[in-house]
Image (cartoon, rainbow, N blue to C red; front, side, top):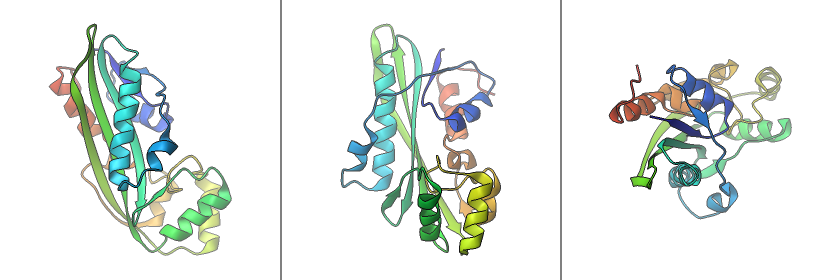
Length: 197
């Protein structure tokens, strides 16, 4: 079965490659800002974006399973986007320091055949609770210079030096923090009779 990752994220691509299976990458055409502008809970935003991304790519395919994904940092109901700059990243880390917040990693699977989409989209969401330790401005500055997490929502890379920013993490799937819950993905592939180890 063909596997199509509806994401251009290098982090998700690296995670999916761990299974040793061939897969294609496709760029979804979704207006994320339109969805985020709705007055929806952050978890629902993540699920909706993952579904829209999967549907966008599935409409162009004739076979296989499409994996759409999105991730939202939920700081007491406020969504934190990718900062883009060091100043904005520092502001995000100041806001998160000393707090517990949630990271919603949503994944939607869509099966496609030559006749079109098969069945309904299959959405899932893994929510991770993260507690960041209090941080000083010099600590924030040193961290940002080290990891440069300007393309990461919440301004941290927990898989790198960002792990030192945290006191506690509770999740059902630690790879969800990086962007793609691989225990869920491998189970979904096995259900589709793909030999995912």
